[in-house]
Image 1 (cartoon, rainbow, N blue to C red):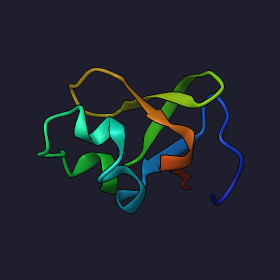
Image 2: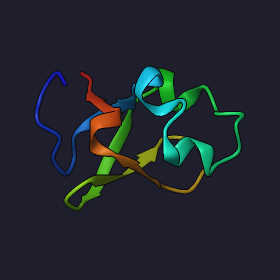
Image 3: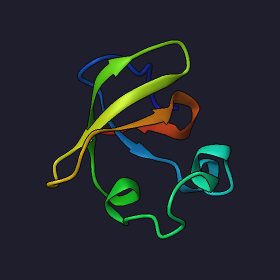
Length: 72
């Protein structure tokens, strides 16, 4: 991780850690490219997960913190 993830952090999903994970297997296997290529903002956190809002007309999504990296 480039830095500590906290509320308001800009993040992106790490493809290698997300693909093949339990969360990915429970979802549609056609992952949208924006989760890997664009920045999303962390809206909320709990022990293991972060709620991320991407700047696209889609709902916010929970991702495991270890599947995210802080960007710009």
